[in-house]
Length: 342
View (cartoon, rainbow, N blue to C red):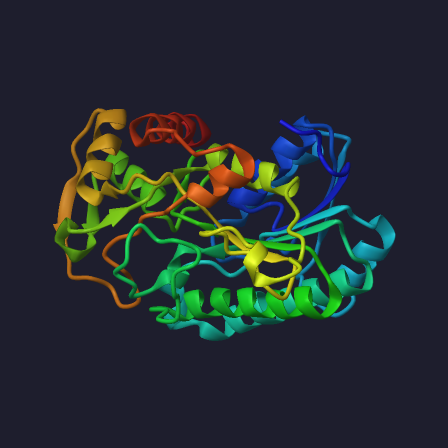
């Protein structure tokens, strides 16, 4: 793999699930890492503080506990550290929670991303990378999802804020020449995962002998992506900062590179959708115990299937995520048993 374009990275959401794994990988690769995380109580703060404590054992890591939407917080970090790469992961996550508390998504996802863009405009990094989501594809029935396909039918407010982030970042890339890559995640799972995600909830319930809620009566599929594969994709993309093309004819077919800005969007997914019932079977196998199944109707804002076209990621980096669900689930269950001593 090429050597990093820089040695100092700023990671927002550094104590989150993905942020924690990304910081660990960057530190292992020799980067100095500055993190910022608000340690909000959307889920168990103890899990976030444990992740943060693990990272702080490395002298190359330092962190600030602050909301990214707080005026001046990011400006100070950019000015003090002048990061070469910025990976913006901080967000209010969750499709269903966005129905109950949409204002938190306005603050964290819209205002917070605006603060990141403003700070990057004042102190430009060599590459700005921002997290989006497969949820932006919404009601699209054209699968596998390709980055160049139309994505204007978001099904949740969470997805709408992420699509807005893509548009906001494009405008800053065009206006201020900021090399920017958006990456769309596909159902990330693995050790240290979020308690509001299906794998965590199912594992906990099965071990406790409680029923699990299975939406759309199990007729769903997801392109589950193991967290280490996702991080590998992000780290490789750091080295592929987009360059504004001279004209649209220079853009290769299938490349999402903007014709008017150094901006690109890239899927990071396993390219292998798994049926929900098969995912549950993998959890049962890893635990050695069957689930008590509570079949339910589809939840508002959800989609029946996701499936990534990861060809662009491979063309740009030579990498394709490949961890099998059975292996990734087994690693999560092993971590869960150890972490919670069950």
